[in-house]
Amino acid sequence: MSPKNLNSGKSIPYRYVFFTMLLASVVFILQEYVSYSYSRADYDFGWFFIATNTLCGYLLWTAFCPLIFRLSRAFTLGRRITPGKVAGHVGLSVVLAFAHRVLSSLMLFCVYFVKEGRWIGGVNDHTLGSIFINVFSSFIIYWIFVGVFLAADYYRRFQQKQLELVRMENELNNAQLRALKMQLHPHFLFNTLHTIASLMDENVERAQKMVSQIGYLLRSILEQDQKHTISLKDELKYIRSYLDIEQTRFRDRLQVEYDIPNDTLKARVPNLILQPLVENAIKHGFSKRTDCGKIKVTSRRSNGRLELVVGDDGHGVKDPGQVLDHGGIGLKNVQKRLAQLYPDNFEFRFDSQGKTGFVATIVMPYEAEKS
Image (cartoon, rainbow, N blue to C red; front, side, top):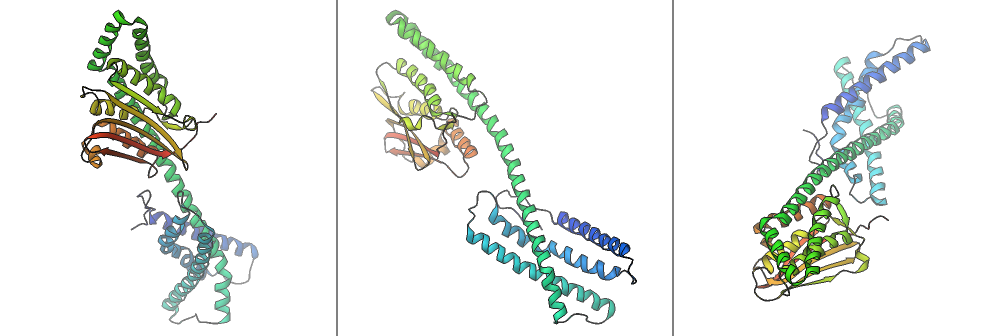
């Protein structure tokens, strides 16, 4: 069994650690032999003692790996590192280094007991001195393990991030295609062209403006291709054009209100993130009404967060908490994209005052557009 990273769900195979330690043991034994050969010592090289002592010391680290891995998790990305944690980890590393030296010495004594039939160890000045001298090398090896585990964890996270970016790119392309299909949907296009035809006899200038707005909608989708995020200012240009067309279609029945402070316009937001919310407000909150209705788009910046709100005064819902379960693909797409861009760092919630009014709210980190 291997220790598992709770964040990634993957494991570090013990066999890699075992074979690495075995290789390090062989290298160290050969180094000792080369040093012995060049020294031209007048005694025989202690193959058994050197090999046993080295193997006991290095292979024992394999058993320590689960605990080292768990302690190193305190220093992974996304976790808060405090001086207390650092001091505590250093203290534990000293204790574990000491424990490693004691256990490896006991293992060496046990091997000799099996081979020679006598116990060569004991608590004396020489044994304690040897343990304390080697504690420092164990301390260094412990932190090498921590560094390797952290590097492996960071690399794994980097790979996951790359995969998430690829998935987000695919999801963004799908969202753009859905938005484009919505703009070119026969029902939408028929109504829009019918409105333009009617306006040609009444207000040519307004009809020309509506044609320009349709062109802007399609051009915006193409121009923002492959962009995961855009400024709120650019997102609102698209939304205003879309709502202007809808206002023209519904004449004076649809009212639109914007409450967008200037300090939010440079915020980076997911591309086309407001379009499904506005579409939902018109489809479910307004289009079936015979009287006037209002849609309000609001943005707020507070404590490093950006809040986007789309509300209507149309038909509400009985249980806002079930909206995503029973809603269309547009709202579910918003939820999925937010989860990909801001994992565990966003809110997507709904509110409704019974049979009247529906509000969709997005809260995400505030990230200003680079100048």
